[in-house]
Image (tube, rainbow, N blue to C red; front, side, top):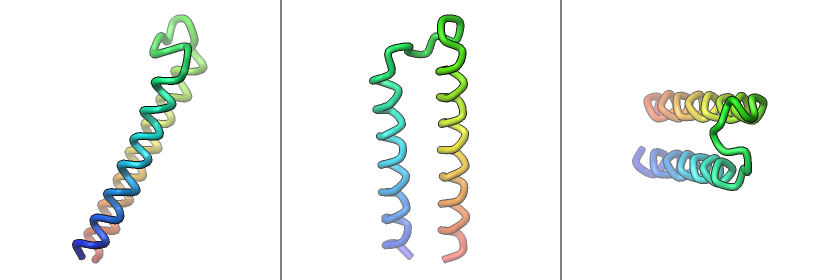
Length: 63
């Protein structure tokens, strides 16, 4: 059980770090007034991360 949890945690942290990397290296930043489209895409990215973390939790509960 613990090894599966550790693997899933590693996957989740890599997803989070890549998402944070894309936030840091996007020139438009978090300004929805200046660039509405990039803000929407970042919001969608956050939603997909929460869905992935929910799926990981479901998988861990089933082990």
